[in-house]
Structures are given as structure tokens and as C-alpha cells.
Image (tube, rainbow, N blue to C red; front, side, top):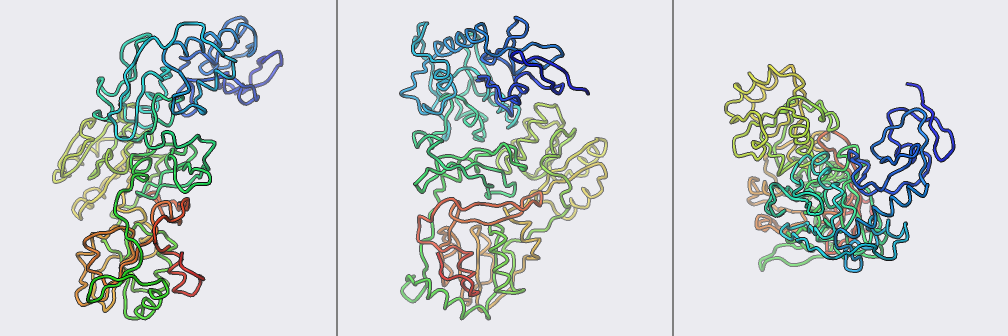
Length: 559
């Protein structure tokens, strides 16, 4: 379509059709104040702060599409006075006493107050009290700070797909609620935290990051979460000059997750309460005693020729490659995992499908970002959902069809009659593979068990349970250790966590974990993603990549 001509502050410009006035003004570098507007969300024009004048009529810039012959003015007395009045009313409606608010200094409402020079309130304020909901383990909701922009409601539904937040009452009594006015901590909230990320004031905040410092006092590092095979893009806020993380936000520019996160990536990665394995210890007749890194290197070099290595899917590609170089073809996966039906769809392509089939995975509890995509299409876009599982799955509450996995053939009779089908699956046996392989109208997305399961596959590392004089075990998911035949073997375990099972080993080595290590991994789409090192190790641990390089004579020291 041809460009259309409009006037902006007296100047004629050509703009592309289909854009809003706000988008055009942004492209022209003209500042327009907003509050309810947030780029990833659908505009709603409720706060009225972005009003502009078009031939004497005030219009909300965020919701008004450009039309031929518009005469937009952004700074007339009428526009300025309207915005100031709206701002006065917003400050009046609830308690916005900035001095005691957690987000003072980075509050969008406060910034607008400074922008318009509000030095007093023209209407009575602080007269109404609203409740504070502290029931949630990670999120605090203070209704006294709320400006009813509804960003949280829209983010919860349009982006995260959970549809937990809504509204109650009308007018000045309106409140944001969870479910049917249930405390947030007892609601169906899955703790994705997106509501806190998009809130422009102190109405919804992350408890952990409260009062740890302003965003300008943090370095922001863009990286990927490595706690599950999805590999969501994250923004990590690290306090400048300190060795701790203030908070984690979803990265809106991530090709993988487009801003969505789950509880694990946003919160649990910062609440790691597992007991860490500290130092390097070797077992003797009196228990374990500490040894130095140099002693460990000598001990390992003496045993390599007689040893085999077991690895899990939490290791990065660089670590796996070094282990393979050291142990040659004697490297095995700790857990068996084959890809029954390879994935042939990306997470972006997962959107806007007609029929979703989820097999063996509760997407509210695991692979949360995949769950968000499915739920926002099923609940929001009215797509159909079939759940097939052998145990309880919380997705059955929104499913159109529910089958036990033993009734797979019955489920397939329905699936074959649908169009635009996506099968999202995990843990299926050979009979189920055969049945699913008969589908010609479906795309498939496989959910690997571990973060870098595909990395193991690409390096040709497969499961095998064999015996050896010396066994080296690397990773942090070491439940499979009890299934290995380690009797009479010298066992070295390199892991970040204490565990009863590992004390069968001869040598225990605590390795760096979480944000203390860096490397690459392949996510469930097969994309090679990078995890950045953000923190200095706070424990006496070994950096595995550096240690392995030292064994190969490529590093000066172990850190």
C-alpha cells in the first residue's frame, strides 16, 4: 500500500499505513508520555496520558491508527493541560508517597511527575486504604500503589498465557485480582513473574530484589537460562561492584522465548538452597581428607588410561568436548535418551496452531515457556488441546480431550481428523512411537530430559552400563550413579552438590555451578545458545572446563 500524508506539529510527513499515531511519533523522535502502554502488549488507551490533538479533537496516540490528512499536534496547551489533569488524578487515586516505595527512582509514574513538574497535589490524596497481598513466595502485590494500567493482566494472558489476573469492582474501587479474588499465593499463579516485570509502579514487586538497588546501579547481562532444554533468553541484573544478582527479567528480544520465563528461570535460579560440595576430597581409611588441586591433577592423570567417563546432560558442549578428547571413545551418558521422533517445529512456529497434543509433560510444572505458548493459544485463541498422560496433569483443566497413555490408539482416531496439529511429547515407549509415527497431519516437538541432551546426541555420547577399574562421573543430576556397577572401582565424582549417593566415590570434587560458569548448549530446538559467566565463585570449587584443559596441558592453573 502507498504511504499516506499527515501533518505532525505543522510539518508534512509520509507514513506507512497500519501504524498507530504513537508508533509514527516514536519514529519521528517525538516524545509522548505513556503509562498503560507497553510495547509487547496490545494497546488499550486507558491511562489517557498519550493524548494528542487532531484538528481540535483529543485522541489517544497508542490506539489511534494514522489516517490521510491528519493534523497531529503533541504540545498544544489543550494537550499539556489534559495530561497534567490525568496525572494529578492518578496520584490522587491511591497512595503514591514515593519516599517509602521500593521502586522509587525507577517508577514510571514518579518519572511522569517530574516530567510535568508536579510539586503538589491539587486533590485530596492518601484517603483510601487498599490491601497488601503478601501470600505469594516470590511476589508482593500492594494495591495502594496500583494505577490500574492493567499491564499485569494483559501480560499474564496475552504473553504468559496463564490468565490468572483480572479485575474486580469498578471505578475507583477497581482492584487487580487473581482467579476469583483468591490470594495470589493460593491462586493458580505458576510464578512466571511477568506481572512484576511489566508493572510501572511499586504495585507488584519481586520480593527478593526489593531494596537491593536501582536498575542503574546494576550491570545488565543478556544470556540464556540453562536450567531446562528451552534455553529462555534472560536479562541478568548484577549489582555493580558486587558479586550478587539483583533480579532476572525475561529478554523481549530473545529468539527463543520472546520475554517469557518460568518460575525456575526467574526465581529458583536465585534461590538455590541445595548444599554445595566444597573443595577436593579423597577417601582413606579414616574417611575423607582434603587434597590440593595439584594432587588431584596428578591423581587423575595416573588413572585416565584405566578409566571411563560418565556424563549427564547438564554439562556444556565445551566441557563434553574436552572429556571426549581425554577419554576418547570411553565416554558414556549417565541416562539413556533417544529422540524417538525428531522435532520439526520451532517455538516461534508453535504459536497460532489449531490443535495441540501434549503427551507425558505437565507444562505448568516443567518446560514452562512451552506451556505459556500452548495456554495462550488454547485459552486466548480457542485452539483445541488434547492431554495424554499416565498420571495427573494440571493441563486437563483446560483440555478438550483427556486420555490415559494406554489409550493412545483411541486418541489418534481423533487427532487424524484434525488439521494443523502439533504433538509436544516426552517419555514414550516403542509402541507409542509407532502409533505417533503414523500421523501425517502433525508437527512434532520433543522435550528432552536434560538441558543439553541434544549436545550429548550431537557428540555421539550414548548410554551404556559397563565396568572399569576407574570411573569418572561428571554432572549434577547424579541419581543414575546408583545404577552403575562401581563395586571395586576407583570412582571420581565431579559435581556441584552434596548427595548421599556420591559418598560411595573415592574422590569428590566440587565444581562451579549456576552463574559461576559459562559455556554453550543446544536447546530443544537444536539452537546453540550461550550461558555467560556472571558471578565469581563464592565457594572453594573447581571450574570444570579449566580443570579439563589443565589435564590436557592447555591451562596454567585451575580456578
